[in-house]
Length: 271
Length: 290
Image (cartoon, each protein chain N blue to C red):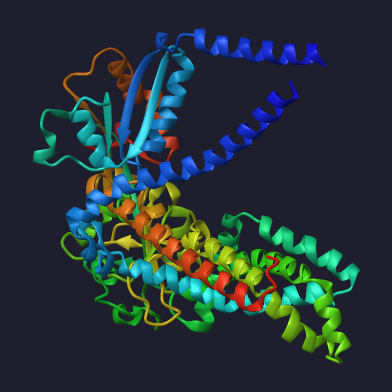
């Protein structure tokens, strides 16, 4: 009995000694924070990057584009992530590196006969001005608007690009993830919502906006209206590990990973 | 030597008991220190009785969410109480042993299903049914309360069944000896005597209903406005915190802690009221076994 306890205690001491003595500061650290839309892509890139650079630890946090801009400006993090282009006030000595572009797709139920909408029609649908699909030559069904929670990057971009100063109707159903938005639209013939291109599949129907279909090609050449840049923000010129990671993201390997996440990588964009 | 052992065990138990009090206190202090300064600067009444929640334009009124939470919970209780009490009476008094042996584990399994599973079931199965039969989007206070009903059934059933079973056997025998039928005995003797325990069961069920977050988020629609009918979408206080916490910064973040304070106060009020009835009934009945 006693020897068993001694053994357990010895193992515990050994493990804790190992954990304490292994220095954590031999790593080079890179702190990244910002947009929750960009976060999964950068996490994937960071993961792959660390496989080939075992001495680097990259910490990727969410918090939203606003937080990314603020913290990188204050020097709290090395890099910020933003899913929108910076305004003049926000720029303030920051450099933007566009790593790719994401498309926002307006989706409806597969049984909805509507295929085309103009951005004004979308705005009226989401503001509540159009309450029945037959007002825009659709079938006689009530319009059910599904949106994301306030704070979501996708909602923010949709608001900026489509709604501008108009408010989304107050009784719009709020779903807290892209998947549940898709689920809500899939089962309700009168529903309309928006999701990111990366989550698009054939369970819902993508709407052609202003005559331009939301294909990767149309996002890359800039003709599709609902798109947003995925950016890395840095204060001053990149140095050391930041520069190395940025070069990796912009290089062919990083861009291939970005494309795999269904984001249009920067090297395919027509500037 | 033995005394020291006893002493250590006694103090050890005392420490664990204190630990839970300390943890509760820490949580309360944390929530209040994060939320109270905001409530003071925004205005306590404006926050509680404000009817618009729109963080992007600086409106933080939680009244629609208070109505939402209380609405979902009370509706769920309206469905769950008769169902679960009848089930508990059946299990405690009428069911044969074999039947009880089947029912008990089934109900316990119901309690063990994670809430995300209930939520997913609601989203995939209930929401479309509600949309087809009641109109609207299917995301509603009614849908949420049905899911909650199923979730709180096992709690209320098992606690009130225990309460019914712990009624002294003499009560039942005396009643039957007076010539009362089995149902008269249940209705007039056993059930009233078990009321304190049944109230405890309902409190526990209510606690689970008002605190449930994930399943409610998935089926309630989360619209921060007053419902006019039960098929309108609503947002619960818990959902409000869970949905927006991921992004909130600054004043919005504090407002969510303010929401937590409101939720906390509501739960305390409900507990006090429920406990009051629990003890009041206990004294008048005199069957104070629970």
